[in-house]
Length: 196
Image (cartoon, rainbow, N blue to C red; front, side, top):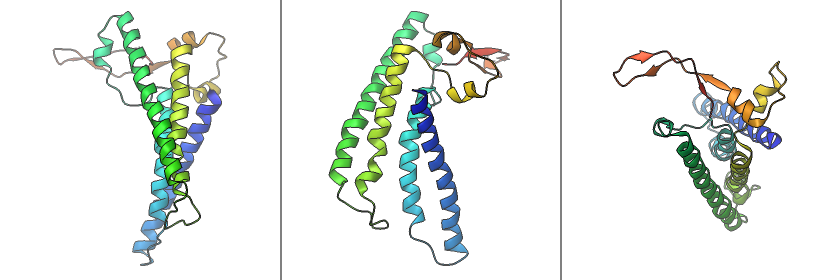
């Protein structure tokens, strides 16, 4: 699964870098050359689809997405575990929706072409939806049956050799929180919180 994750990261980062190069070119041609190129904007939109669906799967694997866990953190441990399982099942439903309906969208639009790119099928441009759904579903299955993974990129650059289990490694991975507000509004220092 680490290789699938790394492939998602590479694809998402490549799309982001390409978008970052294409948009300035569009601005340059429009405002400096006074001859706007027609291809940068639709290509940036297509790359945004890739970035969104493939990159989101990679971000979900390591729980890097935005979440509000205040109320879940207030629950006893056994209810938190149950709530996490419910969340994973709901996310699996979303992944299945992406696979089924994204696949149908690809199938329906496969023989259509894009005006700015007549060689490119519209169906190909929608492929990141079911592919991202498949990656997301695999990452959810991994999380449910094997536990939360640790980041393979940070592990590759770590000087320590990890010999423990996935649960031990996940419990050792910590993030620093600078402060936590109490109910009375004052802030208190908090050393670390488990990375979830």
